[in-house]
Amino acid sequence: MPSNRFRGIIEIELDKIRHLHFGLNALIALEETCGFPLEKIEGARKSPRLLRDLLWSGLVGEDPALTREDVGELVGVSELVNLWDAVTRALETAWGEARLARLRAAAGAAGEKAPVKPGAIEVRGHGKKRSN
Image (cartoon, rainbow, N blue to C red; front, side, top):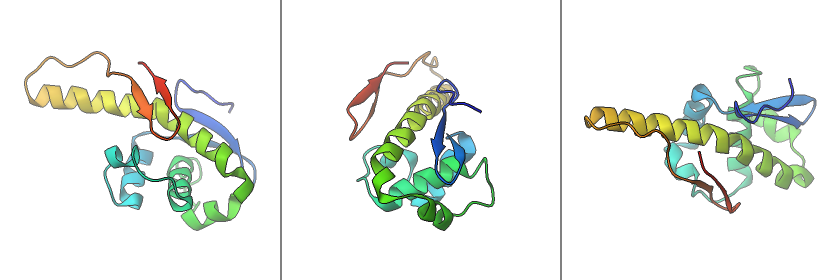
């Protein structure tokens, strides 16, 4: 399956071709693994542990037997920058969808009209912005 940036699927090569995807279950696994809400991940300090946890949560849907330790063994230090970029691209797509869902849910709970599109999304540390 090639990369499909519209669905948030990014192809990466580790031990074999793998597919990063941050659907709802991956985002929940990420929150549980990191121990803090999704909103805090955006401003979190980049670290090898965070990268490993991000990669694991984006890959475990495709390979449920994969552990965080397995992911750590698959990643070489020379690949860190490229993998951060891949994770960022996958999250940018998923993040927009997740934020829109939260905004709609919050608006619905408050009895307001749900927004059609959230504002620009900035992935900190990368300086990239994306308008939905």
